[in-house]
Amino acid sequence: MSTAVTTAEATLVPAGTWNIDPSHSSIGFSVKHMVIATVRGRFATFSGSVTTDADGLTSVTGAIDAGSIDTNEPQRDGHLRSADFFEVETHPQITFASTRVEPTGDGEFRIVGDLSIKGTTREVTLDAEVQGAGADPYGNERVALEAKGEVNRKDFGLNWNQVLEAGGVLVGEKIRLTLDLSTVRA
Image: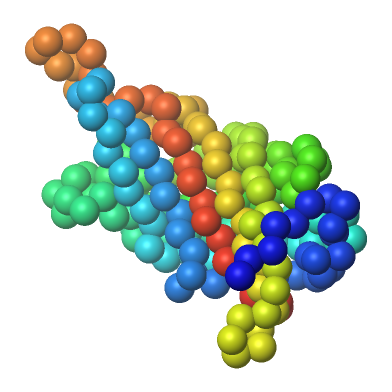
């Protein structure tokens, strides 16, 4: 059973450094396709850490293997790995490092940090919520959190697109990010 964590219950999230457990976590995204549909995808390979103190989250860092992108369509994934998008041969990693974490209430935080994609770094904001803390059946201490945010892909040089005959474009500019992270004490 998961225990909800609030700022008043900060002792439920022990201070420390927590490594992301990729086998129990996911980093996903969604983008509009042809103006009317939504394509969802994920990155299969990533790492990172979360630091906490008595007040909750204090920092978040992470790295994603850009070539591990998976939209359940191999041809599209190949195109996303190409120079038209992520250019993974030259820019194999997507990285994030928080610059500040602001509590917004009841186990919720605003994480502001530098996101680097394809050689371009921009400040982004993620809204995060600590889902709980506790020991797993094997005695490992864990903290779980969910984070969401949006970025404009063109801000990172991901400009490729195709105009549709009926109007609009093939790929939307706004990318929604969803992170579900289970972490283990380092």
